[in-house]
Picture 1 (cartoon, rainbow, N blue to C red):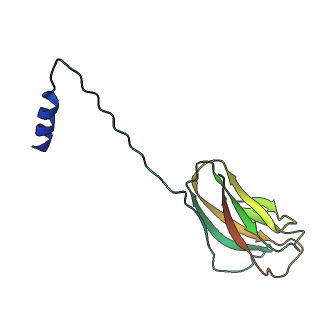
Picture 2 (picture 1 turned 90 degrees about the horizontal axis):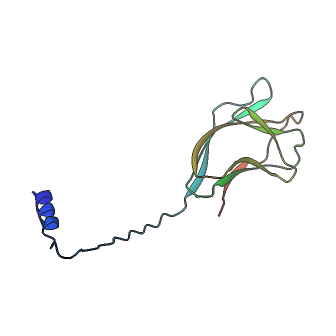
Picture 3 (picture 1 turned 180 degrees about the vertical axis):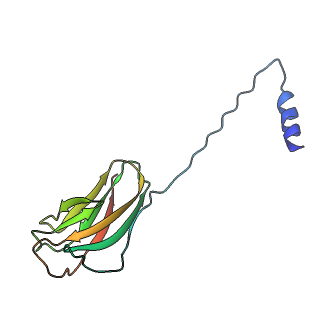
Amino acid sequence: MTAAVAVAALTAVPSSGSINRTIHLRAFVPVYCNVELTPSIGGEADNGIIDLGRSQEFCNAPRGYRIILEHPTDLPQAAVISDAVRIPLSETGETVLADSDQPAIQFRDLALDLGHEQGSISRLGLRMEVKY
């Protein structure tokens, strides 16, 4: 019944003049970006590769984002493996795992190959940077 009343009200416009209406709609959507790592249960595999688990990233930044792995600097032979792609660790202690130029939701399987440095890792971290 409400729809019928709305239609009746719109049809009652005088034919001699025209009515112009403008509706302005404005919305503010905050930028939200997050990366999480769900560690896998287990340890070092037979081939010396450590399964780190699965990362989940979500970012709605219009210009994209970067995912950075923070790690020790004393691992010259080590690399991170992201979805079967081997990425050598940077000497600076920060290695870019992903560089997107658009918003995205992604999942990545991550592993660590210590190379000939079969020791232990003191720290690892994931960080997300928004592109403004």
